[in-house]
Image (cartoon, rainbow, N blue to C red; front, side, top):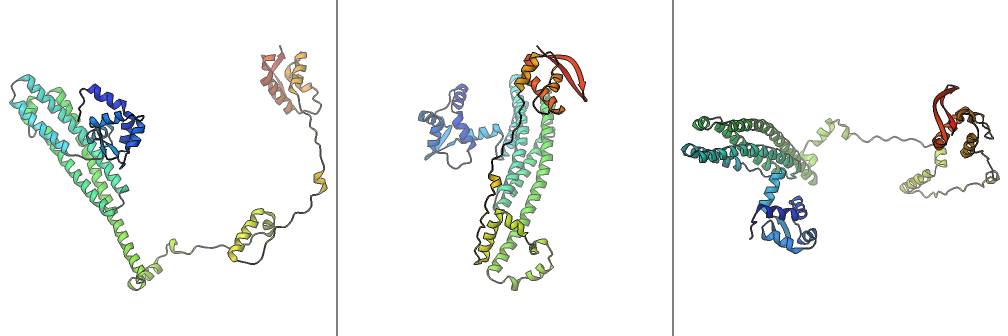
Length: 399
C-alpha cells in the first residue's frame, strides 16, 4: 500500500479524480458501484483507478468499488452529513485535557508549558464542535428512524438506543461543564488563565448550554415517538387478530362487532347516497357524446335493442350558394403619402381624409396612433398639443 508523500500530492490526486469521488460519495449508500461505471467516469483510463486503489482511497470488492472508510468518514464530517453518533470523541478529549493539565502543572519549561496549554484549548474547542455535531446528528437520526423504518419493533429498538446515546451525550456535557468550571482543576485555571483560554471556555459553555436545551427537546420528541409506536403497534396487533378471526369465520361469534357497529354512527359506515334523475331528451338527441353513453349503458344492461345513428338531412341549397362580402381596407401608405404632400397637421388631415367609407372619430384616433408608430422618422413631432372631442393630441407635421 502506498502513502502520499505530501499534502500537495494528496490534494492533486483528489482534485484530478473529483468526478469519480463525487459520484462514489453521492452513492455511498448504494450496495453496488460497478467497476465498469467507474471506468467510464475516468474516461476509460484504468491506471487512474489503480492509483486510487494503491493509495487506499478506494477499496475493491469483486467487481464493485467503494470509498475507503477513512476518506468516507472525512468527507461526511466535513460535509456534515455523518449519521454515526460517536460519543467517544468527547470522552477522549476530556481525558486528553486532564492529562495535559497534569503535564502543564508538573512542567517547569515555559515553552513546553505553553504547548500543553495550546493542546488543552484545542481539545476544548473540539468538544464544543463535536457536541453540537452529535446533537444535530442525533435529532436527524431520530426523525429518519421514525419516518423511514418500516418495522415497528426495529423502530422502537433504534429509538431506545438513540435515547441511550442522548443520555450519554448529556452526561458527557455535564462532565465537561464540571471540568471547565474549575471544580476539579482549580489550580490549573487559576495559574494558566489567559484571555484566549477564557474566551474558549465562555464559547464552550454557551455551546454546552445550547446542547442541553436541544437534548431536552430531543427527549420529549423520543417519548412522543415511542408513544406513537406503541399506539400504532397496538392498533396493528388488533387488526391482525380481527383478520385472523375473520379468516376463521369466528369474528361474529367471538367478538361484539355487531353491537359496536350498531352504536357507531360515523359517516364511513353510511351507505353512499344515489341520486336518480332523467336526462333531457333533446340533450340526448343533440349531442354526439350522448350516443357513447347510451352504448355503455346498453352493454351494462345487456339489452338487445340496437341503436342506429340517424342520418342527417340534405343540405339546403342556400348554404351552398357563394356569398361575397366586400370590405374596404385602409392603406396607411397612401394616407402617409397624401399627408407628406400637404402641410396640415396629421390629426386634422386624417379627420378630413377621404377613406372611401365612413370612418368614426375613434377610428381616426387609431389611425393617428398607427401612423406615428410606423412612420415617425418621416414626421416632425412637436411639443405643442391640441384638443378635439375631449382628445388631446400632439401636433405632427411632415418633414
